[in-house]
Picture 1: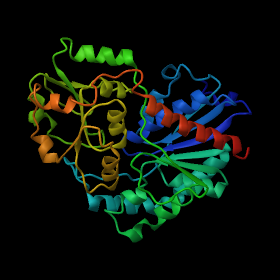
Picture 2: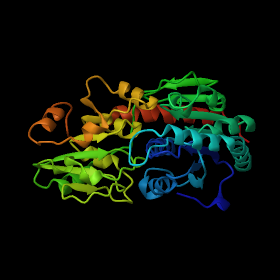
Picture 3: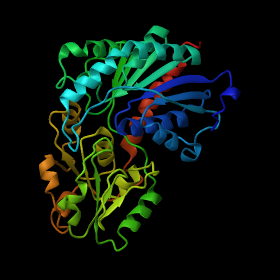
Picture 4: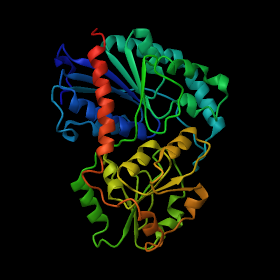
Length: 393
């Protein structure tokens, strides 16, 4: 896939895609959307400029041409490192929100808000952007409005609603005004937002990146060659840093093997880290019998779409979490636990996990992903329709 800006075709449609700095869930779902857009858009080549901060290396690795063999070589992807949003601030060695720390960081970031908007406005003008997509940084919406470029927000939440239980309402006026500038809004499952989208809003569901069934089987065989162990995906997210992971009793559970992210430093024979450079973590979720995670949208939707029972960390003080939990289908096996309960959790493979697995099926088939695929197609087609109507600069 081309990346040489000196050889860009004059008919290229330029999309600037902004992705939140906080965690990797925004990045993984944006990857799924980007892959689908590029696969389905055959009318004209696209120049896609991906803007992100901490997750940018992950995005670069995930959007290499070898990861997307079905996509036209006429499309061009560029990557740009920026600040996108404050995100959450957590206490050290804890999953709890640090309200005071968030307030200080938020005030600092908002003091630079207008400067960053101006910077993005100049960038959009320089690259002659025709569409701005954001998940879900507020800055691009204002920059797009001032530049006269169509804008689209895609998310299950905004930082305006995420902070309502943490910051004073008066402090959120700039955020509310920024999000109010978005022209279109695609709300994802669990969304409980104001009526963003000055021109249009559509409501969609869960989706995730497509698993590779051969790779899933390879992982399952490598982790459980005898077929007698239970594979448990333990993913509390890369944004949570806890020092005492290795002391949890969970890892001693009989006949279990645990999959954890590469940032979790756990030395235990029952624990396997996802390799640091491995981008397609949905394959590990698909290989698991059970998923233990925080209610982050990305991993929760992977568990739902790939038919995996869920144990969720109950963080009731997070607005986004509450609505994601509420969106889990009523027939999907779901158990909520406090952080203290998860720290003390152990499994006997023959009892509790079997109970959790009773429904839905623990194997992934080629038909399990049809709902996810239809949601991605709906989003990609909406974007393609926008591209047919945006003003050519």
